[in-house]
Image (cartoon, rainbow, N blue to C red; front, top):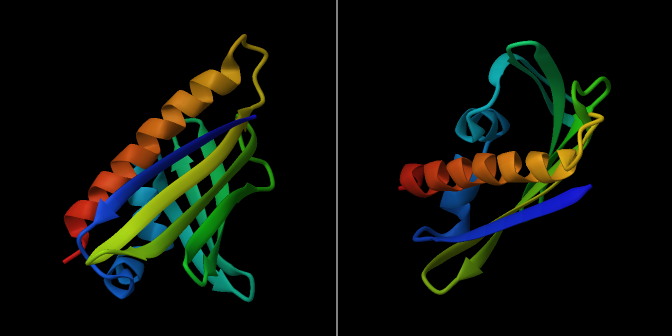
Length: 135
């Protein structure tokens, strides 16, 4: 299992950043999956995300300072996928940190390193999109 963490300063106060951080926006901003279905329940938001040959159920839970999500059930090539997004006040804006742990269920040498490399790119796209979308 590998952990990837990225952090970025956003020139917007935490309430504005929180408004831009929605489960569907996160999935879209990461750029790997398309949203096939979304539903709300007592545990939070569930998004069925799909890419060619892969369908993943992502369970989102709001946090006081951000949100967290995990891949649930049959998770395609993943043994584990968990991500936490935190938003903390900093100077005249916010510090957004995205931290993800990932592990692949593939009998390939360095599979988790490859997964972490790909995950870093997804988190970078999501952070860039967030910085661009927050007023």
